[in-house]
Length: 219
Image (cartoon, rainbow, N blue to C red; front, side):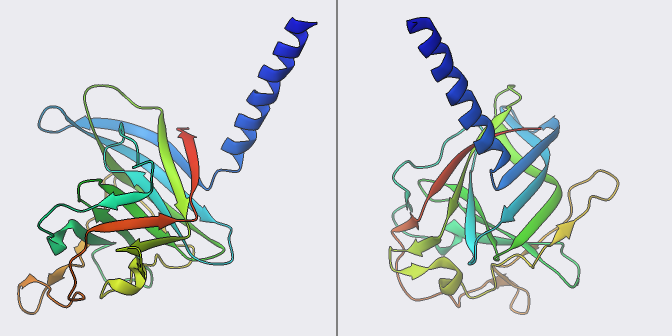
């Protein structure tokens, strides 16, 4: 009887895990891994993010694919603060009718984030995640969050001086199996120097709110 209960419990947990994977907002298809300067590795994936909610959501990934996100959801900057710790990259770098933006937070608790509008799916072929070591990773920790609050008070999408939201149902297809070029949103092309139109405040942390956590298995 005890063995039967144990087996049923294991089966129940397996079903829950399978349902969570099926309903997860992120799908990652692993393509290949290339080497950089040891121990750096570049992991090429096809990335799909679906926001089924009625308002925008942020989707957070570890800076290193083999790492975890800060458990508390409070991501600290370095001291002294450097505005370069929050960076935006717009894909593709050419003029198009759509954009995909990833935000790189390179503070003490780094992460990568995408801001997806409601009822929208983003598809990005040949996106690159970095990792260290020779391991080919098969899972990653992903968070879906309602807001990223600068210093716990201002939404990041309101704080930054440029649009961080990915276009509705944006799809970025790979050309010749390569990762697309991007534009540095923190560079002032007219002045040919880093832009300076950020809010005049010292950022000490970024707080994620309304967190849903997922462990994503690669396809």
